[in-house]
Length: 261
DNA sequence: ATGTCAGTGCTTCACTGA
Image 1: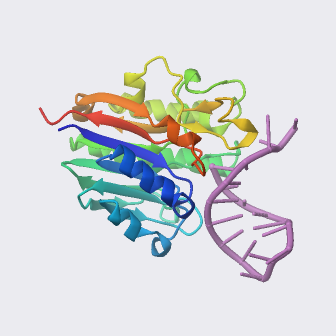
Image 2: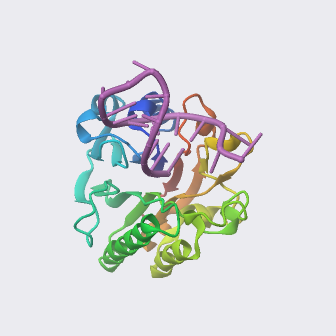
């Protein structure tokens, strides 16, 4: 049996709950990593998610950020919440768990705008902390998917118009360098490997008619450790979910892994 | 020409973050 793993920045779990449940039921991912819950743990609608058939771990925060890992008919086992290296960091952006025989992390990487500035500096520090954790996982040869909203546009063909976004934190050389250093360590960009010519978007801004004009870009990524990259059979974006009523500004993004050899 | 949302606060909209 293949394993379907998805990432979805839902932009508010309370506002998005009907869309989230609908997506889970229609597409039935085995693992779903969520970002931007914008809710503290106490106010997350856990009962509805369980009723849809998913076990879940949450790392919430009131009003901002927040990540989750959902597993269809299973309970993910928590390994780590938050990244080491900055004790005063209170933002809920990283959650790591074991489920279905692999390690999975749900990531909400800092946006970093405006740049330059303290928010961009925080983004770059956070990316270094992520790389440190990712290197430890590679060294231990843990079969791992690091997935979520990376807030990085890796290539110029990952955006409708690179000139329009040239000053944005999402495609600064420093942001891209941090991304490609992780690929150099041995991680595989799953969407890119299946769609090497780009022009696959995962985000369309609410502003300026972004969806209507197809002004999108790719920032939701799935990074695979070497053993899992060998099992990658398909990858895609549930684009139609971006066009629905009360949609998130991100579309769900997914991969399919072959059963263990 | 930020043309949109979601969440918070003590609100009848302003502010923040994206």
